Image (cartoon, rainbow, N blue to C red; front, top):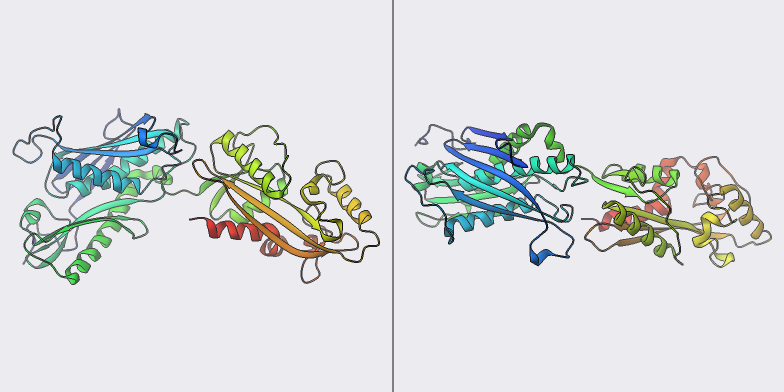
Amino acid sequence: MARTDGREWDQLRPIELLPGFVRTAFGSCLASFGGTRVIVTASVEPGVPAFLKGKGQGWLTAEYAMLPASTGRRKARDGVKRDGRSIEISRLIGRSLRQAVDLRRLGDLTMAIDCDVLEADGGTRTAAITGGFVALCQAVDALVKDGRLKESPITGQVAAVSCGIVGGQAALDLCYEEDSGADADMNFVMNDKGGLIEVQGTGEGGAFSPDALREMLGLAEGGIRKLMAFQRVALGAMAAHIAPPRMLVAATANAHKLLELRQMLGKRFRVIGMQEAGFIGTIEETGSTFQDNAVLKAEAVRDATGLMSLADDSGLEVASLGGAPGVNSARYAGVHGDDRANNELLLKNMAGISDRAARFVSCLALAEPGRETRVVTGVCEGRLADSPRGSGGFGYDPLFEAAGGKTFAEMPEDEKNRISHRARAIALLMEALP
C-alpha cells in the first residue's frame, strides 16, 4: 500500500516556515505543511492576567481559529460563543509554547500567539505550534532589541507533528485524506531534549497496540528533529535567542572574584560585572554574617538591574582569634581591600600562638527576579603559615595553607579553583539549580 501523495511513511510533507510574514506584528510566521497553511502572529501587551498579578512573572496565551474558506466549504466564524474545537486547540498551543519560555524572565508582559488557518489539509494544530515557536522567537528578538527584555526567556525549542495508523501502517504527518480515514490519529508535541510535552491520540477505527504507539512515537521523534532544523534555518540569526547562556551579574567590585566566578561558571552562564549590567554605586555590607551580606548584595543588584545576580561574601576565620577576621576580612586593618596591611595585622595578632587552624568560608547568594533567594556555603579547612608564601591569588591566599602544605598563593589557579571555599560553594549551588 502506498500513501495517497506518494510519500514515504516516515516522510514529512513539504515544509515552509516564513518569519516576518505580517509586518505589523512583533513576530509572525506563515507555516505551510503541504496543503495546510497557518498564519501565526505574536503580540505583546503590558501587564498580566489578574490571577498572576504580584507573582513576578509574565504570561503566554494562544488563540486558534479557522478562516471561513479554510476547508473548501465555508466554516462559520467564531462569534461570542467560540467553537469548542477551537478552544481546545487554543489551549493546546498555549500549553505547548509556555514550555519553551521561562515566564519569570518575560517580566510584566503578556504574549498572545494568534493562529489563523488559511487552508486546512490536516495537521493544523501541529503546524500552528511549530510556526508559533518561530513567531515567538521573532517577538523576543524585537523585545530584546528595544530594551523591553534584557535577555531571552526562551529555554528551548518546541515543535509538533501528527502521526497515525493508515491501512495498518504507521505514517508521519498525515494529510486530510489520510487523517479522515486513519485507524488511529495522534499528535505529538516535543522539546529539543526529546521530552514529550503533550500527546493526543484516538483509536478512530478501533483500539491500537502499544507497539503501534511506540512506532508512531519513533516517527514523531524523527519528524520533530527535522522540523526543529527548519525552525532554526527560518530564524537565522534570531535562533541565538533559543536557550542562550543565562546572564548572571556578579555582585562584586573585586576583579579577582569576578575572574574566578567567570572561570568557574562560564560554561553555564554569561557572567558580567555590576558596571556592565548598569549598576553604579556601592553597597554597604551591614550584615553580621557572611550570609547576611551575600543576600544584601545579591538582592540589591537584582533589584537595580532586573537580572539574576550572584553575590559572594567570604573571608577567613581563625579559631584562635574567635573566628576573626570573619566578616571584616577585607577591612581587617581598617582600609577595605588593603591585602598587605590585612596580612601583616593577622600575623601580628597570631604571634606566639601555636594553634594556627583556620578556614576560608564562602557564602553565595543567588537572587533572581520572581524567586526566593538561594544561599549556599562552602568551607575549606586549613592552617595559617608563619609567613606569606607564593605570588598568586589575593587576600589571605599567601598565608592560607590547604591540605598538602601549599598556600593558595602557591597553587596554579585551576588547582585552587578545584578545592577552594568558593569552588565548593559553587558546586553546591550548581547542584541546587534546575
